Image 1 (cartoon, rainbow, N blue to C red):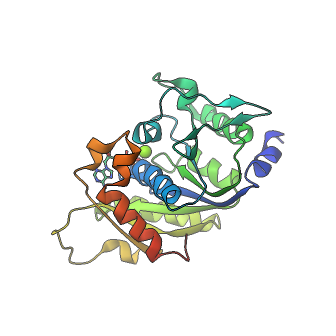
Image 2 (cartoon, rainbow, N blue to C red):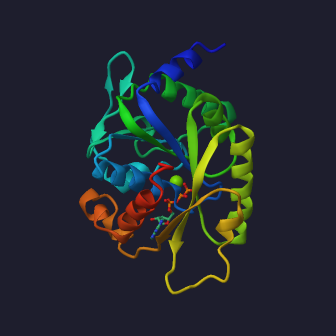
Length: 243
Ligand SMILES: Nc1ncnc2c1ncn2[C@@H]1O[C@H](COP(=O)(O)OP(=O)(O)OP(=O)(O)O)[C@@H](O)[C@H]1O
Ligand SMILES: [Mg+2]
């Protein structure tokens, strides 16, 4: 057995809750919800870590405006504290270069990243998942025993079908799905029926499509002022038992 597997469990021992933000479909807002969730929980006084596991298209550093920081090596790697959030991403090692990964490379990189990262004592570790049901999703389920999922979705038939598969996979792996968040809701567009109410997991609430979100990217103070942040805070306070 890979000796790194036994180290991984101990790396998470100081973390209270590990939440992966997933959803299957690309572009539904997983990175935005992950980064904003980390930011909002931090703003609510919690200790938070954020791990970007999207090796092909890491985004969280752009959302949170992470620049010119590099992790410190000390019996492993200590995630830099960025705006009060312990933040880990492949981007520290790749910069702006694309990562020419194939199959096994992904699994190796995940095991390595999980085995070397020394998280502190945290209330929450939020994990930004890449799109798709792929090696990364399967590895994460296998390697992070206490992982729970929050799904991000919308009303599109195309999203819902993929979402149902990810939920089924999580449940079959005996991982808890905290619930689903509907993102990029256009207010005034009242839906006849909310399709996310019947996918077998709790509906946590809605985040509106926020026109100010794009111009706030990279600036945490501005991000915390957005309707996006307000909607997310509302979702957390409505579902305190689940978070
Ligand atoms: N509530 C929102 N209001 C406005 N724009 C949003 C909102 N949520 C996400 N976006 C925008 O939608 C796009 C997709 O968001 P994001 O990158 O977070 O999705 P993703 O699911 O992580 O994508 P990928 O599958 O590629 O990782 C981005 O341009 C983001 O800025
Ligand atoms: Mg993403």
